Structures are given as structure tokens and as C-alpha cells.
Image (cartoon, rainbow, N blue to C red):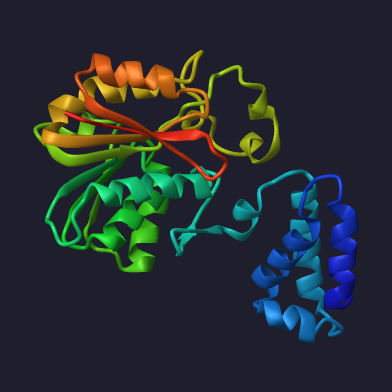
Length: 277
């Protein structure tokens, strides 16, 4: 089988499972064969060896069943950082880069600030902030030891040394500490949301996606507890669902936050809410 023949086969096999079958085929080829995108064109008629074909067909079958590409290749880029991902963590998404953008807007470039990322998962948000603000101390928490293992591996691979990882739910491992900025991309999907049965969500850890009947249980906890862990003038920033901004504004207000603002993602949805204590 040649490179072009695999692409043709994959496009047919994935037509019903993916909106981007050719791109998926190319990503699998890059992963298995170590090719560049240029090589996919210039070497399209070269023959794949038997081991490559077996591995590609195995991954193709898994992709046809809907398994996310990020889990098949073990990686996803976020904030231009190559991250390892496994089924123990959510797959970093482009809209979450807005959370990083707004966090950086609240952290002066060369200031030594204390930052915490609650529910860090793969470490994507914490590592992006730490890479841009090397003078800051960043702590990242997660209740999953397996998720923290992924995050620690990413920090080591990227040689980002100003991040500390702590095991525990939300603020539990942060007793006595106060921060200048708290960020979180917590679970915010309602438990009965039909989207959980679609696409990549079927394969991602349910505990990192859902949070009670209305999806707001985690954000309720974070908003209520955050003031006790912020310095005066400190900021809380959370990512949330496209239709939750009004509810979260009330949660922030009830907790004593002011300067509450919402920020829209590239699709135009209110995706990030910030508040100052």
C-alpha cells in the first residue's frame, strides 16, 4: 500500500465518522511514519512497510469508531505547546486559549505573582501561563493522580519549572495560600446533556466534563471558596458553557466579586467570566 492509497482508503473509511477524513488520515500518517506534510505530497507514491500498514489500519479502525485523534496519537498542541494527552485527561480545545489570554491580561509581564489553575487535567492552562510568565509561581491542582501524571510529564517535556502540581479537589490542597489570579476550566456540562453521547465527548473522562444537573456544581464551589484564597484585588477567571454566563454572573456577584465581565470565544459565545474581589 502506498501513502496515497492509504489516504484514499482512509477517506472512504472515515467518511461517516469524521468531518475531516483526509486530514485525519494525514495526521495518522504523520504520527506513525514520522513524515512531514510536504512528504505526504512529494512521496505520495512510496510504499508503506508491513508494520506501518498494520499500525495505520489499527488506528484507522479506532478512528472509524469515533475515538479522538488526540488519544490515538497521544498528543495535542495548545498555545503552541506540544502536549501529551491520554484518556485520563480532557483534550485541550482552542476555545480554552481564551482563558489563557485573559489570565495573561491580568498578570503584568515581569511581575512575580501567585497563580493557581484548579482542575488542571493535562496541565494545558497552567503550562501556557507559566511559559509566558516565568517570574510567576503557578500551582496546579487536580483530584486525579493519573491526570497529574500527564501534567507533570508535560511540564518535564517542555522544561517548564515554575509550576507545582498538587493532588486534591479544588482548593483542598491549598490551605493557607492566597493567590493573585485563580483560573479554572472546570466540568460544566449538565449530567443529562445529550452532547455527551456525541463525538469526542464519548471517550473523554466523564468526571472532567459533568457537574451536577445543571453543570454548575463545580463553579458554585469555586466561586464561593475563591475569595478566601485571593489577595485583595485578585481575580477569578473560569471557562463555562455557552449558555451559562448569566448564571455565573450571579454566582460571582453572590460571592462578593465585582468588575464581572464576560468574554466571547471565536464562535461568538460568552465562554469566559472574570471577577475581582
